[in-house]
Length: 357
Image (cartoon, rainbow, N blue to C red; front, top):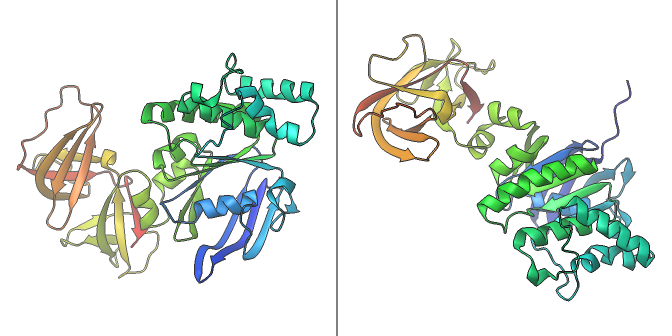
């Protein structure tokens, strides 16, 4: 069976700026037609990685191939990619169609063909009827659509997006997330999307690569990243979680900091290994003392805070050494215990994941 050629392949990629290593030996294959997100905090190396794919930075070491061709030293205009940035960089004196067709005209494409292709790109991003408007007459979301159309009109094999929704308000950003995913499916090309927004990555991506301090820590589907984080950083960065520090015991349980032992899959880690038990707030249950299922892992504390989110209630429980959140999503008829009440937090045996500390 022949393995399909990767749209983008990074092998041993290192990028240094003087004495600073911004990207540290990254190996990554992105499939043709995939919506791939590079996710991580500011300064983690994700944008530098994207810029190397774009040709705006060159690797210090390693191989960078696009559809099998080595491009690590080629300038941007020699690569089959286009980039959409957070700043739309539209020409203010040009109309929508002139902005979209600009790159084609620079390539000496005939005016009639350039306009035809520009109109098709404008249709793809749902800007029909606004071809004659100038950027100042458009909303932020509309300007973003024009920037997308301008990038797509050149028919790139890979579209690179560097935090393109960061300047939009929450509601519009969520709307554009759905539209971007729909657009990617319609055009069928590879999207590489850089973001620091965990929800954005989980919502839009086929796969996610989580980066920190220049390293690629884990690559997987949104479900894999969320349900089976590779380490403490990934568990803590993706969504909300409770991290209960402890140590692996010889019987395979984890001894928490308060001395409680909890049965959990320790993944054959050696006794004495420092770990954290990652428990998502929505996987935890709150009980009155003595009412929890006896065979489930549990800890005892005092209810410290109620946080109402509209569609859920987050209950913060103070343990001896940390606070722990429990998320209640079915609020119909639910009555939370009074603040200061002693409570027990339990969870199913397969609800928590052990990660290396």
